Length: 378
Image (cartoon, rainbow, N blue to C red; front, side, top):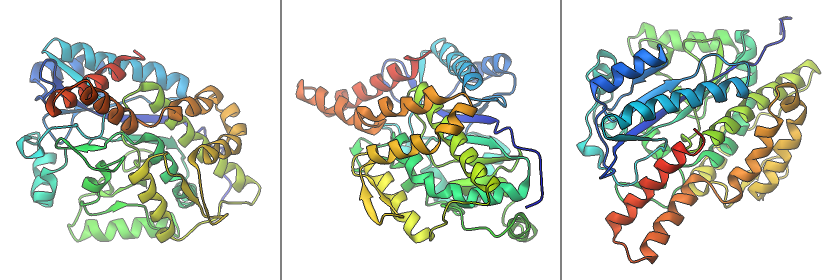
């Protein structure tokens, strides 16, 4: 690899939210007046999403989580304030607990009209939200090299982020049902092992030249080179109701990237495993969150997630110090101590039913809980 300046490992965070009626907790269409007000206040950091009940925000380029916290807090607060003016509330969750996807409509925008046409019926079920973390890596070859190694850790990030146990009022038995919906799209899932930036560019160009896709933004892998920025973009995570959890996951993504780069400076690297094995860990994270552990492929054993997390924290300790996010990395212990968002949602539902509430009211309590968590750190 050619000598280059050391990356700064800047980060950017994108989140997708759902809008719900403040009284019924049903999904609601984002009013034009609300979107206009958000655009005026957030200056290009907000946009509509595929469905009319969704809204997407993105932080500026941030040096680290301290900057990202202030920007993300401002963005979440703006969406909340403007939504309340229209009797709505935002929730940061990957699947609405009881909404019916068949009753939702996509945003009337050229990009989304074309997407609906290209994907057919699959697009209609896209009632899902995610969280993306960009890490700045200016050198394209380095992006590919680090991506190949970072893929190993995607199931760990997914496990901690899981927030979508329910679909249309039913408990799916999964911690991240979002991925079962998203994986129906083409060009999704774990990224393939890539030989070089040139090889990646040739593959993208082949699809573009055939008219299959317009550009690399239509490649929706769990981890990809960004189509717009000189970054690695991690897309594996469910969106987190709690702002501080989002920041800790972003910090860990940033630190893991720096750790792998640091190994390369010493002519070392993380072992690259077959996608078949990584896919099994992805499934375990999707199914169980943090409750059943993941496969440690080096040890060839299923290891409790708490033990894996301690190893991760130790692994990136030097990087967390360098990137000034030691506290956010350590906070992951507390974030998963009482389970993931999926676990908390299930506890809320169980408690409501234990109080004698019917299914619909109990599900509304889950949404109320999600609204509270969205606003807890603002």
